[in-house]
Amino acid sequence: MPETRPARLPMHTYDENLADMVFAYMRERLQLDPVPLDHPGVKDKLDRTLDGLLGADGNDPADVLALYADHLAPAVISCDSPRFLSFIPAAPTKAALLFDMVVSSASLQGISWLEAAGAVAAENQVLRLIADLAGLPEGAGGCFVSGGSAGNLSALVVARDTGARRRLAEGYVPSGPWRVAVSDQAHSSIGNTLRIMGVDALVVPTADHRLTGAAVRAALAADPDPRSVVGVVATAGTTNAGIVDDLAGVGAVADEYDLWFHVDGAYGGAGLFAPSVRAKYDGIERADSFVVDPHKWLFAPFDCAALVYRQPALARGVHTQDASYLDVLHTDAAEEWNPTDYAYHLTRRARGLPLWFSLAVHGTDAYRDAIEAALTLARDTARLIRETPHLELIREPELSAVLFRRRGWSAEDYHAWSQRLLAGQIGFVTPTGWEGETVARFAFLHPGTTPEMVREMLDTMA
Ligand SMILES: *Cc1c(COP(=O)(O)O)cnc(C)c1O
Image (cartoon, rainbow, N blue to C red; front, side):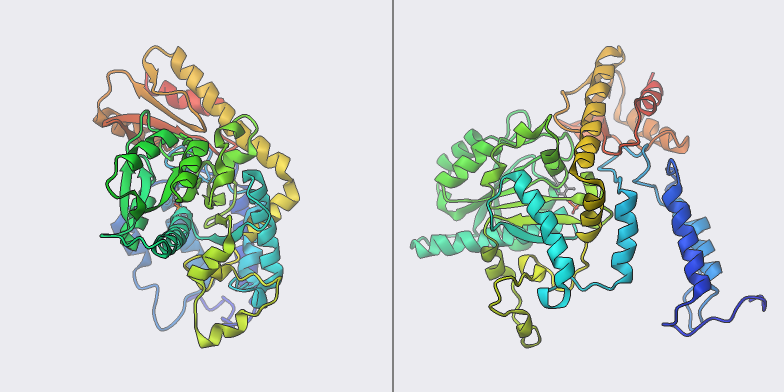
């Protein structure tokens, strides 16, 4: 080590130089406009870079930060680049990103009212706003969890336990596992969740990829043991195609058959903010539980999912952990709200706060406009595709995902095209599957994605 470098301070001491270095890096990262896409990593190269770094003695922080900035960060494809149109992109606001650093620095333990009332009150303000948009009643509430997967799992455990309790109280005894009705289009995390829970799926076939109340009713009517079904899951915006299920119809069937009605809006739930699509969500107000991922289309940093229950007491009954050292968290105080009681977790980051800060700073109109911008771009792109002879639109976009074909292309052509786009830093657009065929898909979300960028990407398919 060069001797000119300042001596390292003891581990928990504030180090002005280190702080300046990290803040400088953050300033630079936050100001990148546009954020470069960057590249996939090469394992050997990354291993060589990291080799020997972690040992008994530390390293100069400047060297470690430089190693990150020069070698690791560029080997991460930036999902907040406006040219990232794969999977579900990210576009956190600067306000949310900055406040995320505040949350980190403040070591908030978002577990309980006792420890973090200030943070929990602010998170609950956001949950209330989301509940109001969905039309859920006064009294609805929940917590922020790490993602849609964690939200779906936490909600469906409550669905199963609540449903099972009701059925058993009625004298019904199942001959096998409890079941939950799901669409054949449900997100992979739903199937995963049911496997983890030991719950079977009653898979309801869809016509045109959209779950309807009629289809759920028909499946239950044809089933030899419908009372073993205790819940139903609808999707408010499928991840692949952005299709919103018939929430009103499914909710009505849930009432008829006494099923827990869970709505997975991890991606599409943000559309509740957008007047141009709000009517598609009619019926969501019937949900017993609802998930939306602010780290997707509500412009929050990773990781942040909002989980809201119509009757939070039911979730509390299922998720509250019983341990002597936690007894003090649970008093009879009416205002007490322990986020830990509403999901499968104990310790938790107050991960709703970056969204709270950004919403408070920008106001909900700015969110509405940013979400509408992605919807408009999807509609304009669909028109452009329809007008381009060698391209074929697969379906009108309902939300911000656009599926289309390049006439005459094989699966290999799509994959080669995707790699060319990334190598040229023009876009990151991975192909997807649709009815057994490989096709192209744009997922819009980033307000910085322009029609010119889209045209540039489409031109490479000529
Ligand atoms: C993204 C997504 C999930 C999973 O959410 P994570 O935050 O990735 O865990 C679940 N359901 C739908 C519809 C999604 O789009």
